Length: 123
Image (cartoon, rainbow, N blue to C red; front, side, top):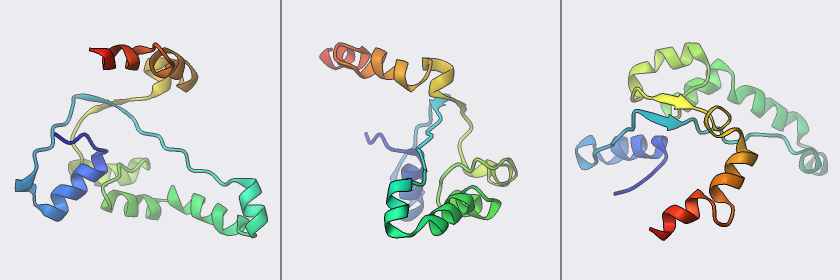
């Protein structure tokens, strides 16, 4: 059993063969929302602010979302997502805010010492 990000599982089946793996997709899952940002202190020091801002803007453009989808990432752009609808398993996605009350609350309830994660790990 390998628990992996969806894009990694899809990439593995694409690279190694669909007959080599069985991907089990839950009916519901947490929407992964990794942060992408321009860190002022870093770009100012390196003089790369314009390039960093352009990259960030491009990442969420339709063209950038096409590249993401072709590399097994679910696109956030609605039109691009529609085009790749058959490439991704159907599942209900929810956010940390919707179900767990935000990251601060989720961290406190589930990942702090004695939280849900610790309780499950003891079993």
